[in-house]
Length: 101
Image (cartoon, rainbow, N blue to C red; front, side, top):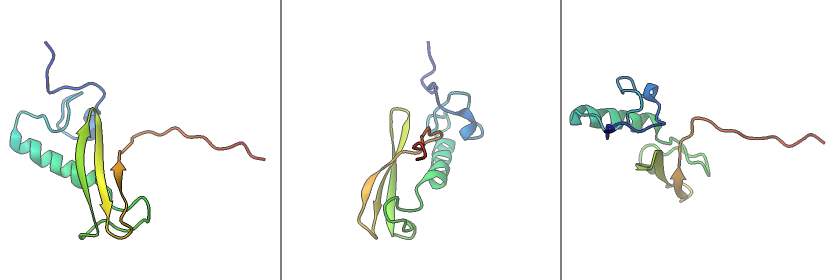
């Protein structure tokens, strides 16, 4: 039988104290669970609007975190430019550059 608190593909080193493969937010201790999740949210929430670059701090915007599968998604609104959208943090990105010439 599989452990319901473990999901493959999640980095255990992202949060000290999490078991390998453990999902943040599913620890046995509810108080520790909330505190660790709140700390991750404060650390990872967008600080600037991706459209205009304005700060989202101090009521100049809002970012609400939710999970969809293994993705953490920040639904974000900017008061400065009125942009609204989802921001999905990434740990790795593969891109390309056009050939010179």
